[in-house]
Length: 204
Ligand SMILES: C[S@@+](CC[C@H](N)C(=O)[O-])C[C@H]1O[C@@H](n2cnc3c(N)ncnc32)[C@H](O)[C@@H]1O
Image (cartoon, rainbow, N blue to C red; front, side, top):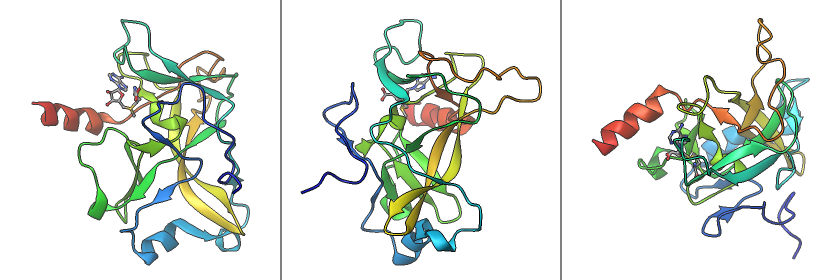
């Protein structure tokens, strides 16, 4: 049997107990209508819409154990740039288990919103790709260097899937971020304040 789409093995440093996914896994509880909102024909997209074809594993990132005891995620992993990434560069998609509220793990620290209107999220707790290892910038750096943006990915057979992609932040007016992310630098996003307040109330 041929390997799944775009799949050529596991990334280095991948955790054995997590399923590596080159493409999203859709919950059986998702209605046909909700799937239809996520998977559509290329020809249904507005003219000029950008379609990404990410490689899997991703060549531009590296899963790395955090060995600096001053890092707030010390002992865990982080995702680092394996090559220089320019401002606005697409890094990789955030892949995982695509679900709605009928199938949500409220305790997950890996659940990212994919479509607020329909309550669809992507949870990479048990299955996903390298993007699940991206840490929040708080306590690591003064600011994030990457962000999530909506994207369409080529799903084969003339179809595209709506996903969330990780992008390097744009250079900004002041040009402060003009260099992008250097090779060896940790990729850091903002999870949003909500992530940390929810976590505090769950712990307290
Ligand atoms: C999406 S995971 C990130 C990858 C995680 N470090 C790992 O190795 O699986 C989110 C979890 O990483 C940790 N984390 C990420 N950013 C952090 C930060 N700035 N400070 C403290 N913990 C952080 C927290 O435990 C959080 O629940």
